Amino acid sequence: MSDIDNEGQVAGRRPSLVERAAQALSNQAGDAASTTPARKQPSKPMAAPRMPALPKIDEAVEAEAQKAGKFVHLNLDALTARHVLTPRGERSRMAEEYRSIKRPLLQYARASFKKPELKGNLIMVTSAIPGEGKTFTTVNLAMSIAKERDLNVLLIDADLSRPSLASRLGIEESLGLTDLLEDPSLDVSQVLQRTNIRNLSLITAGRPHTMGTELLASRRAETVINELARRYPDRIILFDTSPIQATNEGGALASEVGQVILIVEAERTTEMEIKGALEMLSVCPNVMLLLNKTKTRFGRYYGTYYGTYYGQDAEQA
Image (cartoon, rainbow, N blue to C red; front, side, top):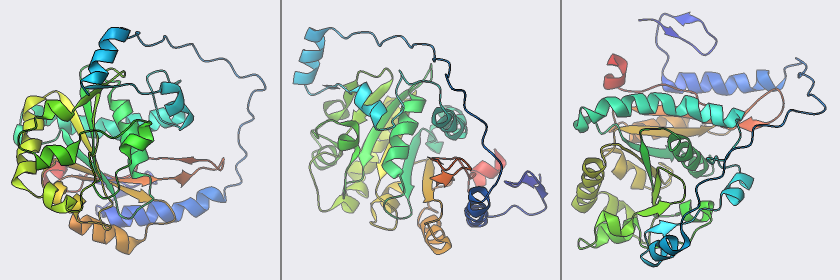
């Protein structure tokens, strides 16, 4: 079947991810130089419908859960101020973009519920180099998936070299992934934290560790990941990992997941860096390329979905 390129034309040969990324990057200059006038904004925009407040959690139950280390309260107002999607968030362009990003991921994940060996509900998010918006993307993707009616999301900080999930969410580090991987006596339930966002749970990175790659490449890690996939068959598990060319942690984890999202920053990531990252991620059958921070004619930056699956399984889907 012929493919449609990002200009809407049918191509005789399927361009590679690198070629698509290069084309998308080159298009940024044209978009920025566009003289098409922006539509005039109304002087008094209509107020968006007010969203109902989340159900209030009983204070005694919340206090007991916090004491047990199994509950963490996320400040939704603070998250909104940091441009993080929340259940209370109004309809926005960014929210729509993340709906576009998650749809093919969830389609493959749901198909793999019937074929657990595909591990489609295990999704790793990485970038070629640091600073491309990896954690920001992972958090917002988790928030978007949490809005699904029939799915739960487990967000795991697997960037053991420079964990940032806890600080991004405004919470404190606690027992986390490194503790779970190092101590066979610990159970997943002892490090998993519920949140006040329905359908969203967390596992932070845990205490700092200098041998993160070895932990993620261990048999214990394989056992834990398989247990996560088996115990929570209706759960999408997102791993926020280190940049693939900064450490070997992401490469160690890529072979254990069914889908990978590679973040590429517009006008910054080079073709050589993309090629190197894709080579390191080739152990995973499905890699999605996401072009981040693309500039629109209005001068604002958005995380924009761009890419396709890279692998035999996806080609046949």
